[in-house]
Image (cartoon, rainbow over all chains, first blue to last red; front, side, top):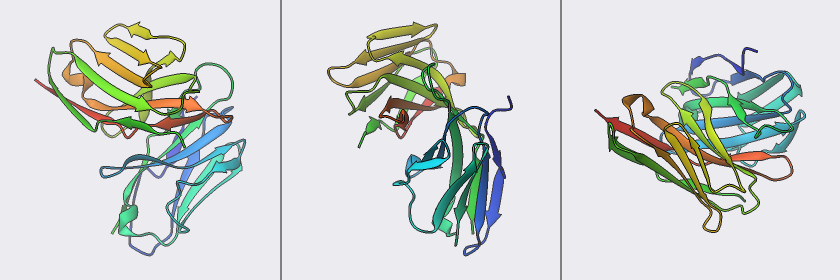
Amino acid sequence: DAGVIQSPRHEVTEMGQEVTLRCKPISGHNSLFWYRQTMMRGLELLIYFNNNVPIDDSGMPEDRFSAKMPNASFSTLKIQPSEPRDSAVYFCASQGGGTGGNEQFFGPGTRLTVL
Amino acid sequence: GEDVEQSLFLSVREGDSSVINCTYTDSSSTYLYWYKQEPGAGLQLLTYIFSNMDMKQDQRLTVLLNKKDKHLSLRIADTQTGDSAIYFCADISGGYQKVTFGTGTKLQVIP
């Protein structure tokens, strides 16, 4: 398995533009998580899905952020309109159900810079 | 909700032992984890401990769990420069087995 795949790896955009981050979880995993990491705030959970259904989106900063998981193999995180304070590294992670300690597997992250 | 707390920064000399501490609030946690994040990469699982254990040793790593105080620690013996990274404590709880991460402790190893 290729692991969790995220795209793009780097994104530079201007304030006000729409940004879409993509994630492909590990096949067979039933939970997917979106995180944001900054120097100031550390790692923050934005939203997580279980079996494609959003379970907890209380970490989503505001209405400019939205996330979807149309099927078990794909999720998007959208920011519209983007602002400079959204600059961060965004991680997607997936987790399988059942035994084994429920390890989360992280993607390499998308480094977002909003100018 | 569940809260996991760590100190933000630790600096040690190469060859010394490092001890990274963590406290958590959910007494129903079944597993507790340590993840490592190297520069420019995502988090990777380093080790984990079942909640019914007090200690787990894995080569240079020792995990200690005090359930009464809800305190978890990670000891790295003979710390090397390659151990420089951010270390995250995490626990798992709830019906959906949600993993909650601490904010991470940045370990700096001085040669």
